[in-house]
Amino acid sequence: MAADSNIVGYVTKGVAANQKMMSGAQFVEVGAEGLELASIRLENVPAVGGASIQWWNGTSYNRATWVEMNWDSGIPWWGDENDWEVEITHTFAPGEGFWIVIPNGVANATVTQAGEVALSTASTYDFDVVANKKFMVINPLPTKLDLSDITLANIPAVGGASIQWWNGTSYDRATWVEMNWDSGIPWWGDENDWEVEITNTFNPGEGFWIVVPNGVSFPQIKIANKVLL
Image (cartoon, rainbow, N blue to C red; front, top):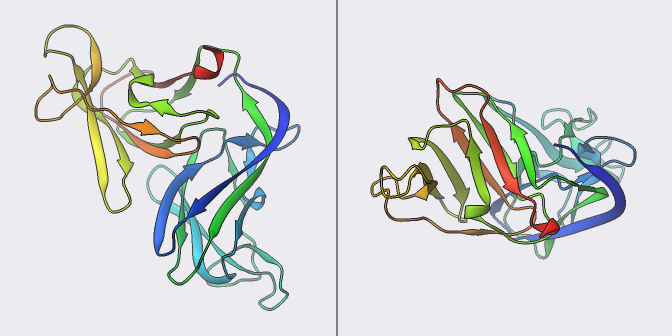
């Protein structure tokens, strides 16, 4: 994804207790191409191992737990759930998604990430993906994104690919199909009735899954750069 990163900022998202939220990297480190895990912080969440961050590695989840460095230092960081003194590190690419899991009994929990805003000068944010995988992606824009602003390239619109997003308790989904079955115009439709368009609005930083079928070459996810409009 071509990007210019020249605006320093931060974003804070509220999270309810006893919930998990799909979010992702909207920023990059100053002078770098990604966001370090250490730059993602939890506020008003006790660093006692109850909260975690999880990201998909292509076949399973990697995870880190929100704990105190050296057990009782009062300094929170992302540590190993079995050994709090071992820091977990990872660099998220712009637009890469992750889960934030918040335990029960906390109030006013927020997730904060800081860095430089990744601004694309292209008409779309393009993510190269591979066949027969699922990918966690986010809305990388500082504005709301409609489901229709997300399209797939080099993937036949025959119902094999889908998008899924978490509604708080389960997944909603739409399937990449042809409008009116044989129109040649792809859209996000109902998996049981292709003529019914599925709509949704994603907030800035809100995440979703893209499921890519087997047997396709050079598949891409394209997100319209509405900041340029």
